[in-house]
Length: 266
Image (cartoon, rainbow, N blue to C red):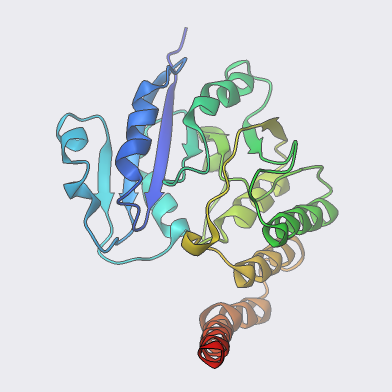
């Protein structure tokens, strides 16, 4: 029987409070196959190597640090270069997802029933998730299903498992949070079926969340581009204007308005 290996890629940015407890949780999980853990420090303010030095020395984890913050998509792409597993999963460094779910998510792939498994948060409404975030996730998933004729319940889930065969047919280009719609679109466009299984989920508090509604708009733009005009240089140009200019302007204006309202109330 061929021995398989699971690569767990953990992109991190300023997760100095959670990375070590997360690794402890992963070490305590009993996996049905061999595992490797790859931590990508995406230019955190504090070098995470200082925090997990023992784990690195004992070769419990592979550690790569990027010289500056470049985004979740870049960190994942770097992790894939170092992954030697037959199956790959992305593990966020916070405590929204529970590593104890991973062995169960692995089973359909190990049984050769599918080559892609998503852990869905929406078999019921996640506790503590704000209404706006819940509706945004549902909207993005509905748009994905409409455009790609799929039947997903959670396109934006952080728990996505893929075989090496799947990732070998996909070229990833995105840099930040648009990784989620990009990889989903390309999996579906390449004819792979995504199997969803329910997972446990704890919503991250809004004040430390790193994603916002502007990222949701960017996800829609990615979904449309990859489905209808993947080679359009005009669309790509307009997308870059939004990503690198319009988003920044809107964020600055939003912060200034919020600060103005706050000062008016004092």
